Image 1: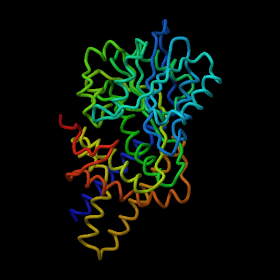
Image 2: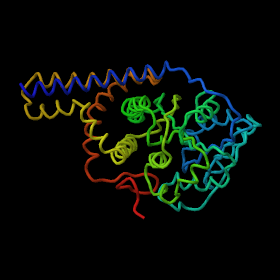
Image 3: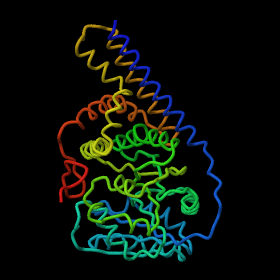
Image 4: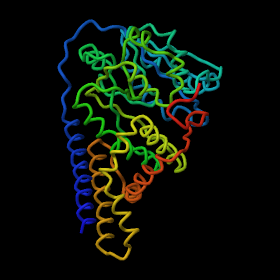
Length: 376
């Protein structure tokens, strides 16, 4: 009897969080942009370092880059970091952008030297910084897609939010390949609703890599490049150093790029492991909203009980239903084959939560990481 009561309470907690998540996403879609006082804009520099492109070219980043370039005005510039070996691939794109947006200030910085710090993204930002003319800096991953009027809204919101940094939630709105489903489900259902909830409680102490807007002066006064470059979660560390941080009312789009299941699982593990390392308490608390774990344990302990298997199957179907509804509300529609894979994801996310507590490494760039920071 006690087991049934505990399972019922656990299930209600899990279903309650799904309902809250759905309501948060619905409210975010209905939210109107805040009214902000307009003032003379400070010059803005957008940092866009490209990762090594290898054989895939710019298929992943081109739409996102153009969404930012199209919004550049006389008060903004974009710094594009390109590896020398990738320049023959990137050059036609840059030429096309310069022809399509002749007034846009696009500055290309090329490099051939190896990284000098563990985090390749921060090594790029360090190289781009001396070329920045802006009083405001916007760090944004190369594949992020900006919403219409994003730069204007971001500058106005930052100037009036009373924080040292403004950072932007993000979601996945398309699944170009079946393995990309893992990224979409993690971002849209495991990550995004939690960020929306935190936004309601005021300032936070972390950043989100999709976009982080801050002043050059604050950065130079508070940030040590070597320390920042030693961390896997540079956005988290940057937010820690530039508190207070505000979560913007604007949601950006990120691209789910996994084309094979092995890389998809590795990326999924890295994301979850990073959250575990950065916020172990909050990550541990997720057990309260994962009743499937309890049903799985009881099913293993008493496999002959039909009611246990009915409950187990019911929890999985509830996970699939709410994940589908949340993704659809975000603008990411799941196909029939995606729904079948989502059944498995309901179990995977519990198993990966368990795996994250064991010692292990994740791969990013050319390095293996066993903790949030690389030892000096």
